[in-house]
Length: 476
Ligand SMILES: [Zn+2]
Image (cartoon, rainbow, N blue to C red):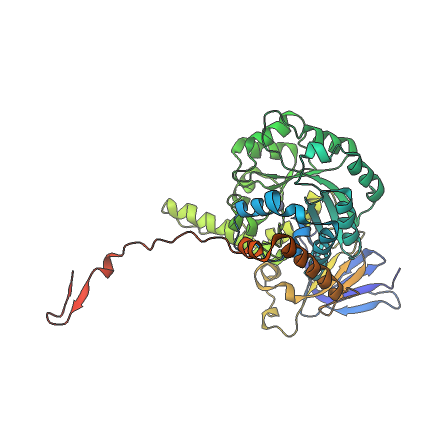
């Protein structure tokens, strides 16, 4: 193991159960664990000192749903709806991804995660057309010193097909081990609501393997209350399940989720642009359903949980005001607080993933996944009066100064440590070249530029008049 490390003299958001905040405090890391948190810590000889003065020290953030393979097409679908996304990946071009393309996307996404202070990311990997694709996905995750959870999926087959194949079973045996907290495992598939419930076979595999299921639920036009009811009636709703989006479910479905202890991964930026439904935090609050945050896919957005916190606050508050105004009322006190979204971005994730005994807070004995937000060159880093508000609304990932994962410094002084960005760039460029080559330049361009519906500018009564200089009056 390397020498101990101490973060000195920062504003420390411990995110422990009491949400203890310490100012001018230190966090000492020995080996892969947090040894002590407090003011003026005495440290062992040879400890590496990181000056956190003027900065915020917080737990590494946790993203519970990201289709990392799609990062190879970063930004391509910026103007897509969910329909265009489905057509592109599910129907037309998703099958063009080779194992090396999965690798390229995952590698870039994994690097982006640690750079942004996201120390644990669920790779919602639904492009695994073959076990070779899955090997490539894991190879990339293992090449980057972050904490990941592979959520295995394959949109080119029904879950009852791939999950029962010998190739899948062999992959799990070869690559996944239960005690590995650097690489967790889930199964990722959606439940269509087909009354014959074909997904049952996949749930049975998950139960047999003892792995959680993550599923896009409550996605407008795609997954609905029938899916939730089928899962519940067949006994497959467990506390480990993660229901992604859950934006268009009825009360009965939310009751079923709450009663069985599952959690919801809210992807506010995605829900706002793509059309899964209104970001559901406002109603999850009423049902007391636990929340974690996610960024979904970099084909639209980036792997930036500051953005997730910010948009989630905005969407929740926006809806609260709109609902009040519809009743001619004024919101005087907001329900959703900055402190809450910081909790969702840290503890929310660790609880959802069953990792809460290991990560999610800065407490002695936990694994050292730590982010220092500090930027001495930025006018935005002072004064730090409300540290939760500062994280949610003021800071951005360019302010992520130092990142530690499992006791290892992976970013220091705003620079990634031992990461070959040029190699990742070359791999991603090869994937883009491959996709353009297969699709043709014209189809590639067209896929990126969906038609814009016509905007009909409404009639404006004030434009029907003109100034008559003779009579010095407006005339109709
Ligand atoms: Zn998704």
